[in-house]
Length: 490
Image (tube, rainbow, N blue to C red; front, side, top):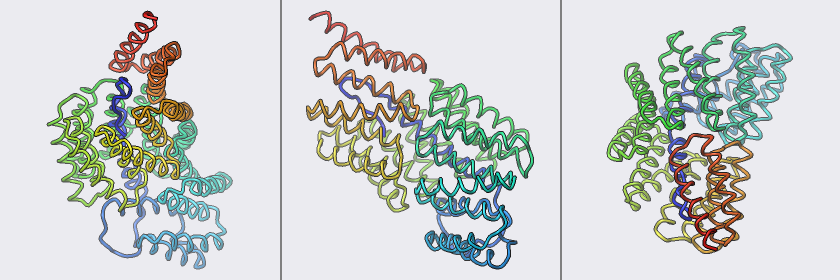
């Protein structure tokens, strides 16, 4: 969710824009892995479907090592599962895969089946079940020295823990996959190495280690250029742009995004083009070029609608809404957020649904409809808790705190903000932690606890200085001065 001014504290709207830009990077990683590991053959049916649904189907079946050549008792239920996946009947697919697993006696085949089952659960946001399948696949692959199987299982575990907000664990899984990929003892090790470098770079960025993230993305870029992978190169440039933007270098970020855009257009990758345009729009919004940002997001929206990418369309509508918010057009923002919400519900994207609900809640908050805002934020919180999205949960708690503060319920506002702080500390999000500390300080000031307010604001200032976030440093320094002036008058 994009943040708003809370209790006089100018909360960083940039955190949300960074999340929006990262969506493109994650999709790019998926596309890269599809390119590397896609296996030819009938996937069961030739139905025309939108690009996002097809990407989900392909992602589930990326690693099928040895299964098409398995014995009849394994191959037949596996092929039936492929047909079910092609029809997007995932429960039926799981039933057939379980039958195949019961008959499979070769460890490589068992690991591949478990990885597919983990992919289905991941796709369905059943993260804990997915973890169990990937962990079992990893154990089997390690015992049988199946290098490729180990890499796929580790990659799956890393991505799931990233989505769950457990960044330290995600980092360890990707590091282990990188070490295996560096051994080179399986097909396409350099491509897999590049993909995991991108993954760990995204994790490090969310942890606040921007230098580490930049180093990993630059290493991935070097590999992609060396092996001539233009799509991977464009993806790495997009990730580098994300880090530069977070480091406060919008011009550097813009150059990286534009270079990525040029490559995507040259190789004819419309989805990559749309992602790059969206990222450019995010930077232009932050720079205050709202007309330029709006134009880029509308171009991205046109592409995503043309290629049939509903999730990309929802992201664009959300970004357009954010620009309209900045222009003071709250009704326009609300309209676009509601359109995005409708799409995310249709394609069963609960994370996007919660994000849009939060944005709608913020518009209602700004319009003075506090009960409506509270209702939307609470609904978003229920979704984020159900799917295990701690970053979303922290955002929702912060937004609920905003509403309660406006309603004059300072005790509950303080409780919700402290709960958000606990989550940000647990998942290692220093920027979110600093925002929460500052907001807690302002609530304490309203309660008359000026010494407590000063302590929390100084803690926030320390973190912002470590992150090198100049605009936030100026804001918190001004707030600290206000509190000190109030203390001096007592």
